[in-house]
Image (cartoon, rainbow, N blue to C red; front, side, top):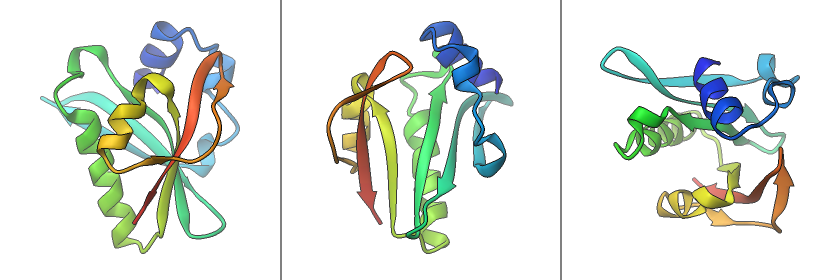
Length: 126
């Protein structure tokens, strides 16, 4: 939660009451460490049709541009394949859309605003 607070609440000014939601207990969480320090995190929920919905992808500022975000997501992709999920969806902040496109995601749907930040839903078939 500390990574999410620093990235979403402190940096992006997302209200804390929005960042912590009713889905906290329903998610599977991943944390990537660098030099024994938590550096990146993401969570996911399963969908009703054998997919996963990745949420709250965050990398602490000192660890950005070191491929940790892509390493974390690739680990989740492998986890999803190993557990026979069919696809992955996520709501990408528009400024990060190119990052997700490089990982194989495609935009699916119209732009929307969440917590004052523009997003597009994106999907990766496994």
